[in-house]
Image (cartoon, rainbow, N blue to C red):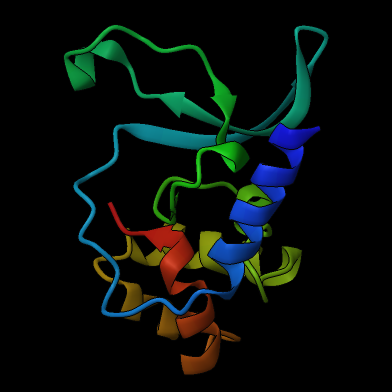
Length: 133
């Protein structure tokens, strides 16, 4: 019970404390994000390790990404994953994926402004929760 109270307090503080400065630069992520469901795991958003040959590491088992508090990699995320971002529903998430597939990977956060429906306010709202890799 005490653990749940402390977790709730920590999440509450995380939500209300002001964030200062630009988000930290994130090195290219060796992970992909995918919505998975099956008898061996609960349905949810999972962070998957890229192939060990690409990363030079041993493969990690998939785990729920929603609990990692790590930014979502826009260039690797599927539609269901992108729809978790605030202000991004399934339609806008599909536009992001379509844009990425037709024009290539996003080089910076600002490239998302080229997607119809994403303006400066939406970009600022999702900026702390995304990474470009």
